[in-house]
Length: 102
Image (cartoon, rainbow, N blue to C red; front, side):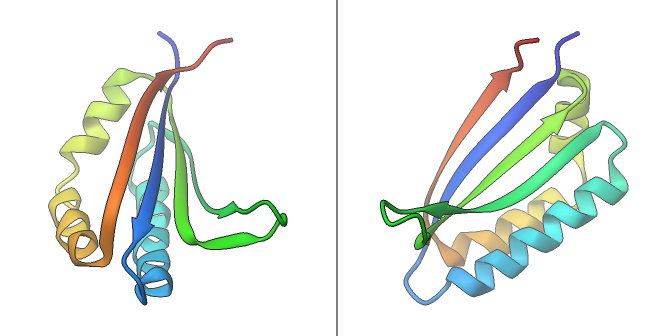
């Protein structure tokens, strides 16, 4: 089975960038510790045209060993807590589920 990537771009609300960064970074660390099917979970600051963090977008790249591992991630009992903590901090998010090419 192919590995699966989840790529997410978040737009935190004004004044919520640092708080959301801390929140999602804790989620990334916990996911890596709890879920053996999660191979990587990186939190990134989107860069602007001046090659500096834009301060407006936070991105995630998550790599899972297969779709079963993604399903296990979605079923993690911590996910509703993460969602509830994220909602008041965000103006938007875009999620892409990708099958990784070899």
